[in-house]
Structure formats: structure tokens, C-alpha cells
Image 1 (cartoon, protein in one colour):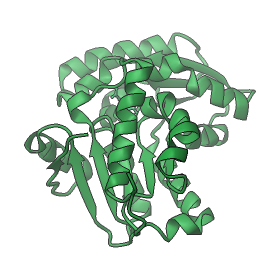
Image 2 (cartoon, rainbow, N blue to C red):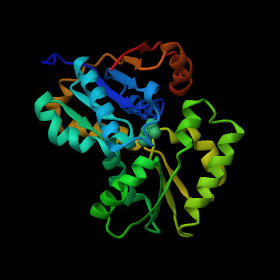
Image 3 (cartoon, rainbow, N blue to C red):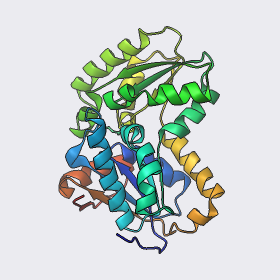
Length: 277
Ligand code: DGL
């Protein structure tokens, strides 16, 4: 397929609602651009799916956003960034369109963590897929060899968010259990990365069970600052991003299920469109 060369919105993709926590922060820092958000809610969660399936689904999403004209796509999903980004960047882009770009969320987070931790003991919460991929361990070891990483997978957290249970007592049960399991690995963790874009939606519960001295790091502001910097360093890409301040929302689920919850997350009325990938 030949994709349109006209300037277009920036694409933002996640398996579900989590990416909205990234989109919201991006739009605070870069409100002038247009965006298309795509949530693959019908097939979320991705976190316990195989490498191959996460790659296949993510590639479909990227192709969809390219077909909508996007020149730049942000994978606002750690699981997709861990399991699909490298193959898409190194293998698929060349065939799809070598001038388009796909960026992830892990690298900017890893870049930033070196400036945050003092004890050099960092905790990571992620989906089973992200934790098993060792992406954070590998990237942190490359960039900050003095930092020790302690990871813990939280397979129940994304389903809690996708099923609108993030404020309920079930969330307390699982969050307390998982926070204790991570903190038991090392008493000197001073910062925890929420390495899944759904987890900021559980922030209050995570804060409640995490020792006060431990910093909880959300990726939204980090990814937003990194995108701003990227566009500044790549004026040729910046020129291909339209500036109308709009956002279209697409979901693979029933749009009438997606829109009300998405409206709460982004603080304005969302009228999503149902799409098939
Ligand atoms: N929000 C995504 C992430 O950052 C994916 C969660 C999932 O679908 O399991 O990993």
C-alpha cells in the first residue's frame, strides 16, 4: 500500500485505555498538533500474550495508523515497545515506508531514570510480557550500568483497569500484594517505574501501599518531553505533523463502551469510532 504523503496527525497506539495516560500528557506539552489515538481494546490485555501475537497486533495497528496518513506513531504501550518495536523499526519500516517513524516508551523512561534514583536501586512494575522480555534490565544496564533493577509482573492490574475496577476493593487486594512482593526484593528501592501505561490509572492505590519515601514514576510526562525534543531535533518530521489541536479516537471495541470511560481519563468528551484492524 502507498501511504499518503500529505501532513497528518501523530498516531498514538496502545492495547487499550492505558495509552490515554500518555496521550493526555503529550497533549499538555504539545497541544498544537493533531492526534489519532488507537486502542485495541477488543484484544487487550496484550501483557500475557506471546511475542509473535503482540508483534502481529502491533504491526496491524501501525499499518492502520499509517493508512490514516500518520507519519509518526508512538507506541504508548510498554508491552508493544518491548516485544514489537525493534522488529518494526529494523525490518518492517523499510518495506512499509522508510520515511515514517515508530517510537516507543521504554527508551525515554530509561534515559530519565538515571537522573531520578539516588540509591541506584530501581523497581519496575510491568506486564508479564514486559518483565519477561527483560527490556528494562537490558536498556538500563546499557545506559546506567550502576543501577540495579528489581522487576515484578502484575498480571491482574491491566484487567482491573480494562474492566473499570481500578477504584474497587479488588484493586486494593492485588496492588497491596504486588507492591509488597516488589519491595521484598530490596529494602533500598527509592524509585519505582510504572512500566505499563495502564498503571497510572491505579496510581492512588499504588501510592497507598508504597512506602512514602519511594518515588513512583509515571511515563506520561517523560514520553511527552521526549517527543517534544524529538520533533525539535527532526524538523523534517515536525513539518509532516498537522497542527489543528484536534484528537480523533479509534477503538477496536464497541465505541459506545470505550467513549464514556475514555472521556473520564482525558477529561473531555470523547466520541470514538469503531475500527477493524
Ligand atoms: N498498556 C500496555 C503497556 O504499557 C499494555 C497492557 C496490556 O495490554 O497488557 O504495557
